[in-house]
Each structure stands twice: as C-alpha cells, then as structure tokens.
Image (tube, rainbow, N blue to C red; front, side):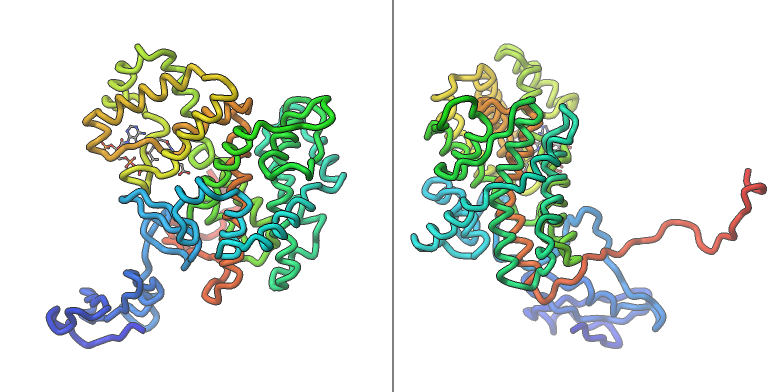
Length: 443
Ligand code: CMC
C-alpha cells in the first residue's frame, strides 16, 4: 500500500527498503510506494492527487514499452544474454531433445510429461485432427486466391460456432477439450488454406503420422495411397514449431490475453492472436528477408547493399531485435535446421548470399556497435521456401507453432485471480462540451 507522509523524507532513512519514495512537487507531499519484483504497481500512483476530486496520477506507456501486464511462469527471456527458456528449460535443449507435442505439453501443463502422459496427450491430439465437414465447406467458400492467413483467421474463429460449450471457460474438463482441439486442428486448417490457395483438393489428416509429418502430408499428398514424410523434413519442421511455440508477451500473445480477458471462448481469443500475427511487423519479417536476398541477387552485390544499410537507405532484414541484444538463441538452432532441410531439397542459391551477408555484417563496426545479430527470421524464410511454401504461408506456419503458447498464456490468464477485463486508460486530447451544430449551419 502507498503511504502518504506530509513532507519529503530524506533518502538516507529509507536506504535498503524495498520502496520508492516519490515527492509530488505540485503539493509537496511524499509517497512511499512498495517495490516488488523490481516493479511498482501503476495503481499505487492513483493515490497521488492534487485534491480529493483528482483522478490520481497515471502512467503513459504506448506499446507497453515498460509495463508488465501480467505475472507469468511460462517463458523467460534475457535479451542481453540471449537466453530463451520455456518453463525454465533452455530452448537449445528442447530443440535438441524434445518434440513439438512434448513442448506443447510442457507449456500448457508447466512440466515435462512422463512417457504415459505424453502418449495420452499425443493420442488425444491425434484423434482430434479432423474438422467438421462444414468447416471444410466454409473454407471452400473463399475466393480462389484468398490469403491463407485470412482463411486461418476466419476458420479458427469459426470453430467456436461448432463447439458452443467452449464459452464455459471455468469448466476444467471442457476447457481441456478445447485446448486439445485447438492444437490438433490448427495444422488441418493451415493445410486446407494452402491447398485452397493452390487450387488443389484438401487432404484429410493421416493419424498414423506424427504432428509435423501429418501436416506435410496434408500439404504435399497427391495420388499416392500413403504419404511418407522425409524424416529430416519432418524433424526440421517440428523444430521450427518448437522455436515458435512461445515468446512471452509479444503482440499476438497480448492480443490473445486481451481478447480472452473478456471471457470469450478460446477459439475467438486465439483467432485474435492469428489476426495480430497476420501483420507484417509480427509474422512477416521472414518474407521481407527473402525479398531482400532476391534483390541483392549475388554475393558481389553485398558490399554495395551493406553500404546502403549503413547510410540509412536500406534495412538489413532478419537482423536486430527489440529484446535480444546479444544473439537470438533461435537463430543458431534454425541455422542447423537449414542445413538439414537443404540436404533433402538441394541448396537454394539464396543461402550462399545469406551466409556471406551474415559473415560480413557480423564483422562490420556498424552492426557490432548497435548489437545487431541475425534473428529467427533471417533463416526461417529459406527453410519455408525450401519446403515449397509460398510466402503467404510463412505466418500460417508460425501460427501452428505459436498455438500452444497462446493457449498456455490464455489458461494462465483465466486462472490468475489478479486479471480482469483488459481496459487501458487514455490521455484525452479532444475537445469538450461542444454544442451540436445543425447540418444547415455547418461550413
Ligand atoms: N538494419 C540496419 N540497422 C538497424 C537494424 C537493421 N535490421 N535494426 C536496427 N538498426 C539500427 C537502427 O537504425 C538504430 O540505429 P541508430 O541508433 O543509428 O538510429 C539502431 O540499430 C537501434 O535500432 P532500433 O530501431 O532502435 O531497434 P528496435 O529494438 O526498435 O528494433 C527491430 C528492433 C527488430 C524492429 C529492428 O531491429 C528491425 O527493424 N529489424 C529488421 C526487421 C526484422 O528482422 N524483424 C524481425 C524481428 S524477430 C521477430 C520475432 O521475434 O518474432
């Protein structure tokens, strides 16, 4: 609780205390605000008033640059040290040893599963990969060239109409059912949107295959009786899903939490996450990397391009990160996956340009000084392209992996007694009390 003292207290007598002393120079009053987890509660500032009618002090923080919106035990990031952990487990170890479904279990349940628990989880998800035929028909109603991400967004939201009981979000059993369905059906919706865009018949899930293998089957299967994924592609895709599974309070996760805070069903909340990911600043950077590499065209053009970046005329896409200022741990893992995929598909000449570009940039003073390193998107686009994906599918693939993170965050939010419906404040900048002007009198 904020305590109010009549005049400013000296700094020395509170040294060591886990509090912040604030003096309001408008009134001369001093307030002591508790510090917990190196954070002060913004609502404590409301007690700082000029008079009793005053609303109280607010903080102004567009884009939540310095405001924690929740307490979370799901994903830890240390941007300076290049650390990413899910439930405390380093991403490197998970990418090396785990499967996407095991990681999804970890994110949702908070701990790694025993073998029987993993088997049950995998079985449940596998048994829910099919979607209602009406969903298929709904998707077939889209224009022939509909953007697959728009189709994924709409069909994820549409699922809520097939499972109306999903709005009983406090019912643990029903809630669990929707968690399983969402993780299970996302690849099916994603693959249907791909096939639609290509004008190809939709392929139903094959429940003999793994999560990633089944997705590849629904993408590639033609007339063969049984699709058998190349294990190297299957593993590379599974690793990509692991790397994208969660990234704490990013734009789409915040959208899921914010929309979910209205207590809407999880399909609608996750659809909000898909919508956020549709935006080029979130799910679209890897596409920009590919376009950039194509534009550079050959290794000889790299020095000229780098000069353009340094003079501010260009941006080196796939470099730099708001949080990671040392390296993006996902970028290291993805580089290895690139090699595995190209072993199967043959090398893409753009890889040569990418590796040369990375080498030159990492040695250049401009990038070193600004702590600019390759991020996850520098190489992910190359993998997706090697897998035969058009650029429109890149955010769709991202969404499949991110679904488990969105759900884990949604579940955490629902059970957090401190969470209420999201409702930011504003600083009003418009006019006040203006009399209505009849149309005939307006200029
Ligand atoms: N190329 C050239 N210069 C850059 C780049 C870049 N990619 N990124 C940052 N800079 C410069 C920037 O111009 C500024 O220089 P100066 O101090 O001289 O003005 C300095 O580095 C600091 O940059 P900033 O814009 O303040 O950094 P930020 O944290 O606001 O931006 C970023 C982070 C990711 C938006 C930015 O680095 C960027 O635009 N990168 C390229 C796009 C990209 O790859 N995005 C994918 C991010 S990873 C996705 C995910 O995690 O989901």
